[in-house]
Image (cartoon, rainbow, N blue to C red):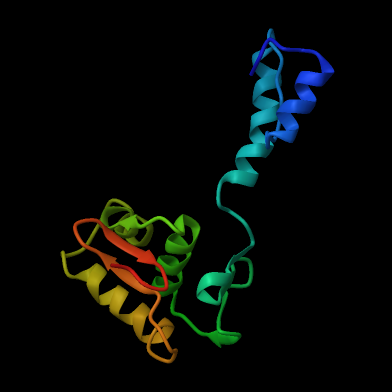
Length: 148
């Protein structure tokens, strides 16, 4: 949002990587109409998430996972954990956020997340040359080739 309305300023804004350019003053409804499609695009709700560094591809519309070009079949809970981690990649995801993704506000006993992470690792890590699901001490978990 800016007061610079000249075409040269708009050009500079777009060339700098802006997705949109809103000149003041503006109607609040117009701002909403511009932000809504941008938020859908930036909301990590992509149909296919590709993480080339990890040789990982997730098709969210088909619920399919490929690692190193091999299809990996996941149960629903593992799928939910992986999708949550992939949408946050390369950032770690807190234990609380992962629990919320699985159970909402009704989290079972404190060991339940560890069990589900173990199941995810069995299917996603064990058959391959290197693990990609790593614990982040004091925080949660992250998808990474290595995590120190």
